[in-house]
Image (cartoon, rainbow, N blue to C red; front, side, top):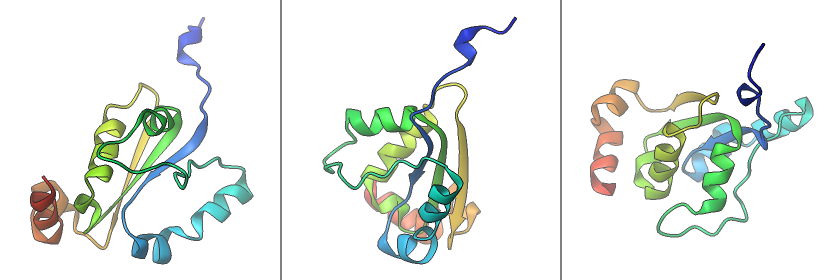
Length: 125
């Protein structure tokens, strides 16, 4: 018999982590409408005040989401907020899925911290 600890209730189906208005405008803007149409609950952080580090509300949203979608763009690493989100996502609770999308950035630039992504990452860190 399976343990009841293996089953959990998720507050959100998806937690998106991304940076930049161009990513939103050209890539993500239509996705929330489709998620709603399909009954997929997506965390939206419009009302969270951004500060030096991510707060308890955002950490709770990350841990309470079944799937985290990390949209890595050339400017993702320019935001210490995004990097803090990524750390929290990678410290995920057992049972969550993380999906990485490389948007107009070469995956090897992210891995090796080179190219535009690497320049921005080094500047932020």
